[in-house]
Length: 285
Image (cartoon, rainbow, N blue to C red; front, side, top):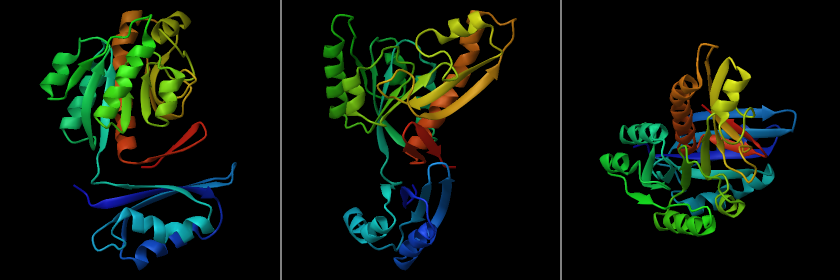
């Protein structure tokens, strides 16, 4: 396990930002192992991600870091997040009946490809319970009746809080979350939508794509907001199809794209590689 810290910074663009951050870390014994940056000229903003080795670094504690870094942050009007690689995010996965995205997440989690702890799988159906059991992940069934979705969400929120989940992943969870639920976890819910957004939002995108005779199908992983399928996009990919592909072919072939796109998005979030500004994301390598 790496012993590193990661800082992600957003601030107005001006000279001296990189030098100030590098000097702050160097003066305290920090060895930078990865750094990346982006200048948004249209909005006059600067985005930066820096990862450094904590061996011999002082200040040692998070509180001390914030205290000592405050003058630098104030001088450049920075908004920043500080994270540590040795603290894995706790993830709760929501699922319905389709299991391909869940299966891929669980496999990559067990293989160490996604640095997280999947602490619960929560389904509105019990179909994927055996898959969770195979990977030794607790499974909970919370049905979502049409006449009591609020009650179901209250149970889901209680489960999330009980397992202390930092992130909720909707792995083809076929229910629309309420605005109140979404507002409770801003930028902490990732969804996979089975189309190349903004095309074919909402239900049955493969049906809509088939009816339009598209030549490309895709998938989009995004943060969930109150607006359906309109949150900041994290990752997308496409697959070429033709008139020879029927609706079932689109669905079957699209599953490969869906699961890989979702797993990449979850990994990048857990590796603290994503910065957001408004409805846009900046994903650093």
